Image 1: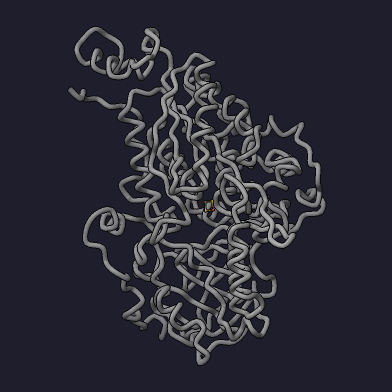
Image 2: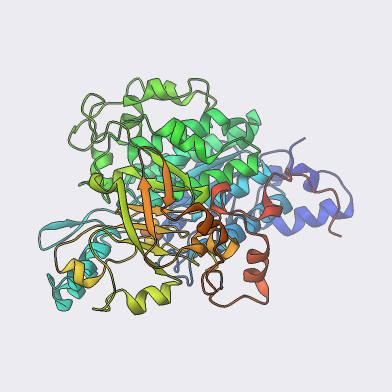
Length: 569
Ligand code: FES
């Protein structure tokens, strides 16, 4: 008996109600045990990166029909990264919770998860992990490469670059605004190795997609072909009863960490992977990212750290070609949704352009990955993306310039009297999960205008916030515990000497130990911008955990399974 038959089978009043309201043209054998598969769709006009998923859903549904299943589209909570305030991360857990509950509450046997924009694939995977129904992801794919004045635009990344050029006086505001209509060339998500592209790669490395689909551009007809194949696969997944908890094992997560390093993926993947692992009960820690990722070569030359864009990656051979290069570092036993190991799809993968996907013998960086730092300023850890950092700043001492909030930063960063020089360390606190609330992408602070005008393009920056996957720089982020949760960033004072030593994985302060121990938190440092009194924000602030464990809500960690024991009528 399938799960959906717990609703539909029988001759009693309740099964009658469940069937009758769903018939609406469905064939009479639709309720006799054929798998009912939901297409959980994050398409929304206010999530522009995902708006084409309605078309993708049609191909998925066609595949489900062909294989004998009953497709059912379920619009689910969707987060448009560029649109929502104060930050989409504030609602990642709400999206995950609402999707989890709707998957559990409904008469379904499996789910196809359609996502794209940054928080959508993480929230879908967190939900699917907690309900643990057979599930497979279709990543919506990146947009095509737009150009401005003959030069390719990295969506997101070039917004930061162009806006800094305006501040440095190198680009007029008029020309900056002219580039706006060129930034988004087609349907699809950001075309850099930002968070959306990274999480599509993570979903594939975890084994949760049809192998080879991630990175297929949104307008490419092959995406619809693969979506249809995924629909058929979903029916097989249900028949095989293969669940996320069987696919996403510790080995799969370590494979994802290898991929994260080889692709130079977004630091946001750290919090998302930790949160997904938390839902599954997989033992994954911050240290795993450093231990497993730091010996992995960076092979993909994509913006924000490199040159090319997602369309180039696909042309050059795509995700499987990159994983082929690091196949020996992957867990050979980690399976995909097909039931076969990820590594079994790599033998035939070929690289067609070695400028985009470097050979293992000539990596961009030999030891890439995410460095996990600990020390006086980050007892529970902080992360730094080595591929996006300036090599000369990886060992650095400098006087702290401390900002208590984003508003404080904006008010003072361009002040000609700001006491800052090329060796200064910019510190932004009050921007963690509880403090902001929602842990926004503001850790890549803008550089002071007076230094930009002198040609300075990077400073060491430290924050309890996140940074956009499309950003770059020597940025220490996700500092835990955050200042609003009693973390030592709150003790820091203007002019304190901060010591960053990435090779030693340390982040310390050069203040006599006795003085540091006696320090009281700055009054402003722990203050929330506006402490929420009701609604989701209140629930979030009361229950959100710190970045080092994935910033999930404490009561959402783990799984509730797919069972509903009580009737609705
Ligand atoms: Fe949606 Fe970048 S804003 S992926």
